[in-house]
Length: 125
Image (cartoon, rainbow, N blue to C red; front, side, top):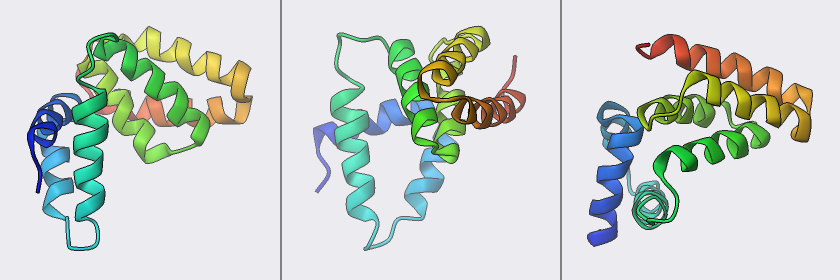
């Protein structure tokens, strides 16, 4: 049964990813996927994203780098949009992806720039 961390996580998750996306994700939950959604909301968005020692902007930039290196394109697009909501600039996102290219490889940066450009086009300037 979801508790305090779930409620805190749901709030942050909606603020970062957008309420429409989160509500659509939760709407599609079934018996099989419910434990995953609960874990993600409580552990990731509730426990981690509510820790006070890193601002959301920093967490977003770290996420972009890690997700780009892991080549998780859907998640990268989502987190680029979240980074903008958290106050990151387009220039900061670009710099993180350039750093990905140097430390994780040019192919990772090329794909990540493509995905980030799509996300940036979908967000207001």
